[in-house]
Image 1 (cartoon, rainbow, N blue to C red):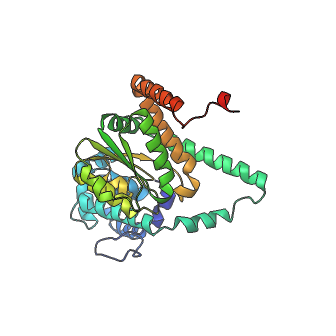
Image 2 (image 1 turned 120 degrees about the vertical axis):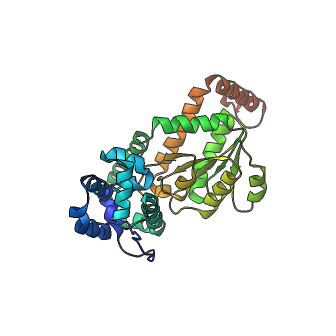
Image 3 (image 1 turned 45 degrees about the vertical axis):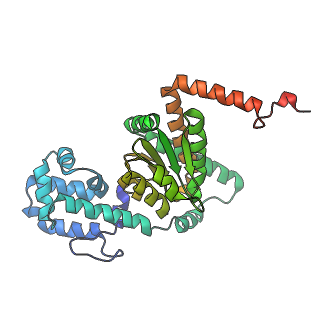
Length: 316
């Protein structure tokens, strides 16, 4: 998380407040400042860790925070109590809720219009600008892609008996591409179209051994989240492709792949989305090289006997 954004997080501290309530960072900074002299040396380390990047508190356990601050799980829990919570779990949950709410309240379309005001108007300059932006987005996404996360995502795909892919509205195009690619590489992959399609019928078939791959970016589609949640209730595993750990999908996913792009992802970040999906499909090809080659040969043979592909040499 970009620490420059930390002062923008709307946070509910202690008693319940409205979604537009008090800026958490300002409030907790004031509280910690008043209490700092009374904190133990270890608690001061935890306080500094929280103030520098609340997003890490939102995703790490108390034991992990203790290890990162050179203190202990007990110290982290005691710090949470000192600043007004019943324990670390309550502090962490409040931060998670605040970051999710902040993301929901953001309007990426408005952000795009504001950003465009400062972009070059000359066509040649704009092409150069956009080229740089696209390259930067792809580089950032792949640089932040954890090898372990890629490995685990591919293993989920390899071991699944059936795969359902869901991505609605602007996420439908990459979801469609991923479905097409995985059906060539391994088969038994279904694309949920939303709309008039019977989602209940499809979900009724989901069982252990199935995998749901869900794509969702701000503004997050409720249908995508609810579909993935129900599939998880039916013991399917969920691979989320989204923009952050604290997105609605990120919080329920068994495995997460992030697209590191400034919003709106679906309007500015599609090169990075497809680069991530291409990397995922490519690594699956590497891991299942023999099986994939056999499927590609079958696909080619069927195509040559069908109306799907045209051989340029046969065209008058």
